[in-house]
Length: 387
Image (cartoon, rainbow, N blue to C red; front, side, top):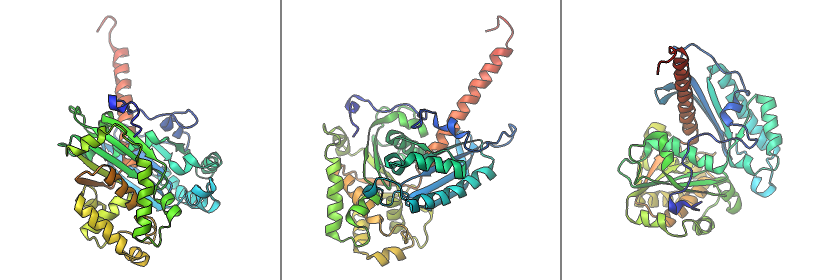
């Protein structure tokens, strides 16, 4: 896993948002993207988190509630920004047009919501595209949004922060995975010394992480996603398994999994689809899906069920639909490769991730800044010689 040094307890342990690709702190740079509200102290502070991925554009707008938040608006659209990227090396004009259409809607929502602070990130498609900078310039010019292209370690950390409420308190460790459109992040949380850490603070328990240069879009384009039989599926699994072969070379994570105290925690359309199928939902319901537990044999049966479906059947299923019908089995292949490498008995499904992680970090950063400002004012107002 980027297990380099991790057997000795290395890995990222901070929670400070890193600089953007241009060296500018992301959240600070975003203040120039559009006006922010400056309401009185009685007005709830509003925060926004936008995630432009290889496949989706997602936005959450929330009001702070203590150290948590309450969502007041959201937006999600499949844009397939990374379509043909693996073959051509650049974002195509149709893909950029689709993304810009979604980003204009997001920009409108942000300007109307009176957002106090925001963060807008882009992930693998922009990281790997040769024309990323021209696309970012176009986004800024046409929408006023300044995209922050985050690195893979930041993406993994944000996923941990966002999914942390679903970590089993009794677990010795968690293997969190985020199957994206163009990359897949895998993070090992070693909870044996967590003490009282909770919520986003669990990022301090990251023991190791890795990012695979493959996601549902890239894998489906490589093997075909529409007509997937057992032979094609096996080839997909082998493809991902080869990428995992060099991960955890000393077997430290494998030994922890073998002891039985580690559970999987998945955040992606793949696992939420599996949970929707498991629950037999006639219409996707996040409230039922988020937090669902699946055992190994149940995941086996669900993947077999998807493999038995034809493309039209997948399109007709309310938990899959036309937008995901050609991608869901590629996602299942990535999941299957992870499960074979680290056969945990239980998988918890998260319908949350990067956006929630961004919101939690923004709120915490803002809270700490206000505390520092308050302490500074108190110190200035204190009588001379008073300690």
